[in-house]
Length: 196
Image 1 (cartoon, rainbow, N blue to C red):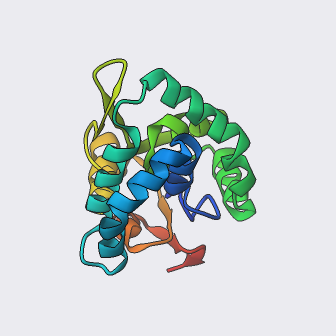
Image 2 (image 1 turned 135 degrees about the vertical axis):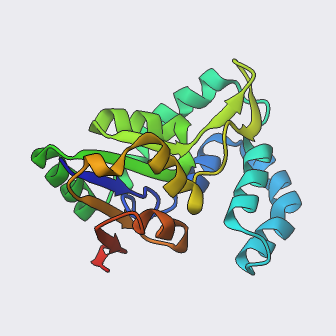
């Protein structure tokens, strides 16, 4: 059996789902207010002054703190069913199906959030490693349960869940520098759907 590791945003999808989900769940008046507050943070990220991880951590705090966990999950399911499905790359869908037909273990490894990826991965019969929103049991606290699943953290989480020696071949698919550590685990790797 082989192992296939897929980044989600901009690899399986044609666009960034992390940002799209914020627009989907955060009311317009709060987005405007937070847009003003977060503008310097986002500018610093775009200028590469701060990391994507720090930027996402701050955005998660403002976007989700105080949201009912049940509501987040319900909105995540709706987002999955009505939005994500419109933005799946055909090549990604075909490649996931190809791996599944061969009996490979397919895993989405993403900095995107559990509240919508859980639903998507369950629908498509694939395993999931991702950023998980933390809560007190019923209300989100605006933090990650563990950490932002990106860069070296992607590789660390894959290695903590799987013994790579149990697989004949490791495949990995990514699109950005945040996927490089995961790609480095693979025997066969694709960057922006090109073999490397």
